[in-house]
Image 1 (spheres, one colour):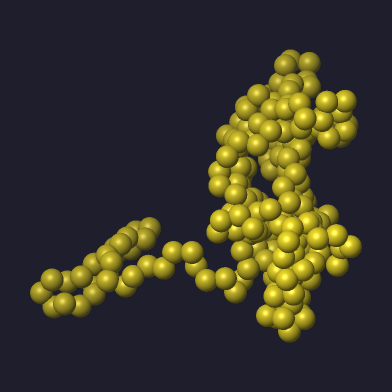
Image 2 (image 1 turned 90 degrees about the vertical axis):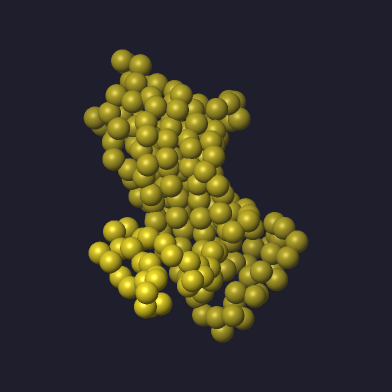
Amino acid sequence: MPSWEPVPGYANLCTQFREGNNSRDCTWNVITTAWETRGIKAFAGNGTNNMVIRVEHRGIREDSATYEKAVSTVSNRVFKREYTGQPYDFFSSSIVVNVLHKKMLGEQFIGQVQLGVLDIFLSEDHMLPMQWFPIVDPNSDLPSEPLGYVKMNCIINNLKDRPIVEIKRSVCFSIAMILYCCDETMGKKTEKV
């Protein structure tokens, strides 16, 4: 457990998860969607980048495809991670989205977006909605100067959480290519494919 309490009730939140799982490790799903990038600072000689988006959480990272000769892309890439561990470690961690320029001999760091897991978890429905985040370089002389923007969202849910929306059985709806509807003559539900 960290020696600081980032928000009031942090210890109570962690204790609640520990007691709910009898002090065993808890499991969370972390889903990050990088939808689009715009205005990324160009590092290649032709005024573009060979861009890679990397999402990292607690040392585990996943890269997107390389978008060649791009400054703005519509990547629509979903990064899914399952974390199993103690709540103290999980809530004090952060999700880092790095934007990199891929060169022949390695990668060049462009900037990053850093999101606190506790901030996301305490948001409504444990989710940050799709929005534009500035990409910054924390090691530069001007760490708050945006080097571009990424449109993304992040969702954290516990495997024991109930669904956000409950669907009533009396409502007719379609899912993919299966159509459920009520048969007016028989009063029974029939399935049409």
